[in-house]
Image 1 (cartoon, one colour):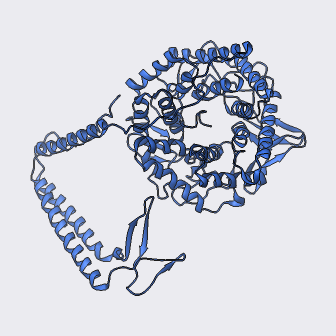
Image 2: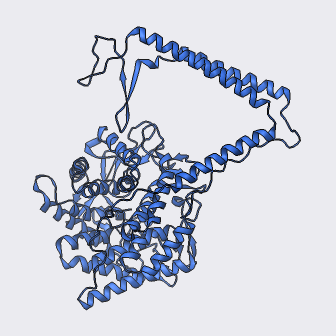
Image 3: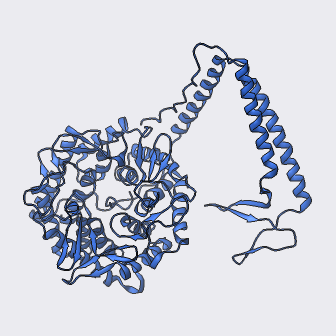
Length: 605
């Protein structure tokens, strides 16, 4: 999955926390004496344990903590006059032994006082009735609600909106191009209008069953993924009435305080990316506000031992976890590596550095790690900070990590040299170990699995043709021409994967084994779900070379989608691109409106 075309991506209040009263038996007005005695015993034992632990735990005063901005660093204590050296840097000297003892005694006295105070407070609590305890809880609850209201009303800082070039262009002079533009716009209207009728507010649409659709990446709540994801396409195509309908729904209905477990990656690129893009295009504050509200809900996903976020997070509880199938509980490179652009923009728009720090911490950790053959494996365990299975791909599980490195450099006006170096290093390793040429002369990107190259390329990997072209300028050793050529070769291979099917639409993945080239072999790989990656690569190649073949290839794909994927209730993916009478999967993906149709407009018109 790649992000929408724009490089610079995008009011209901937050409901009060549900801090309901405790459950008490209705037949008792107060706690019985025996229960008070038991609670006092438990509390006393806990306090005694904590107090005793103070004397047995390691002496924490032998470490001094310094805040260096992005992370805390522990600096070992050394006696006066004795240097401690670590990695070539002399560390800061600590206090003398006498001051040490005084500090320890002060801390012990403070702990004693705190424990005695806590014990007295507990005794007082146990004297109160159920009604008094409930009243105190309600008071605390009201206090939290008021604090959240004050925080919510605090306006976000005003920041300049960049002037986006090319979003308000006129109609093309060529009649043929003008007709094609209107056709793509009509396809967008057909997809949107049917979603508006049959799936409004749902995440996606089932165009044949004519009802809403969702998957586990969006959790159990209906968050209007298609509405948010499609906003930039609607705006760019001049469908402003439809854009305003989407804006009204977002303002009145989009609520992130739901008990729902969502994919951090998917809601980042589809929701935060979609909202920020809409904000930058329209200047409407509601989009910025909603993007920040959602981002705050995602932050608990980063609460792992390494700072590598969980794949899933519950928007209400903040509890995170990883996919069960992902290499012994690992996080996925393409997921935790595809947050950078949106999070950097969030810090820019809010003035809060936390978002920037989260993604920069990920980058710093990756830089410190060894990489087999210079390749980034797709799996990283967030608990141990170690790679999972040694599987590297530029398609699924890896793809957009590399895209975001390059776009981080571009987004910084080419000043983020760290991102550019990571991108260049990665591309060199990919060229050396993954990119091959078939017997028939087709250049493809394979997958590295357990020490050998699998000669299979996924539809998702086809985005790389455009990425190589986009990254040609600024490449090492003046290799711009080389990467333009490599991008063109990848585009040709992906076009062949389309051209060798009955529908002229590409399969999910295709092989290069012996006589089989650019063709899917397994039935489970023969489907097409309205993906945009091939069209995006055509778009980049057309923009950089102005070779008309890329416009022609893009228009061929648009006609194939119109012929085989259009149904009366919208557009649907197909299960077998090699069958001349395809079966539909009955899903209109949100990215079809956000990316595929957007790319058609840019590429063909």
